[in-house]
Length: 73
Image (cartoon, rainbow, N blue to C red; front, side):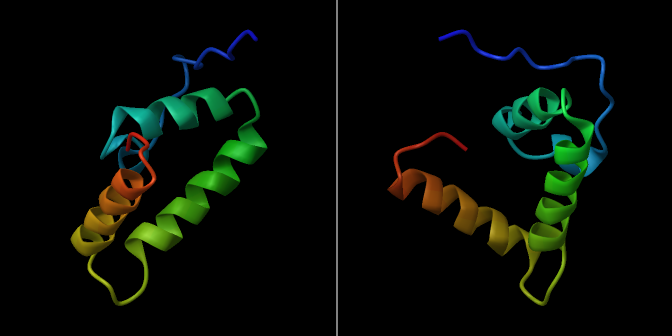
């Protein structure tokens, strides 16, 4: 099955490119559907940057969850 290539022409905000290259590729692939990309980026921003838990702890949790599920993060 052919894969959708990332749209490298899209400029992502800093929070979308901080972390892993997998997330950057995910958002650049979603850029083919800007409405979906924007909603997804807002969700990630709210989940990872908002609330009372420190962002560094959330990042460690995301890494651990990906390890447990045997997937790259």
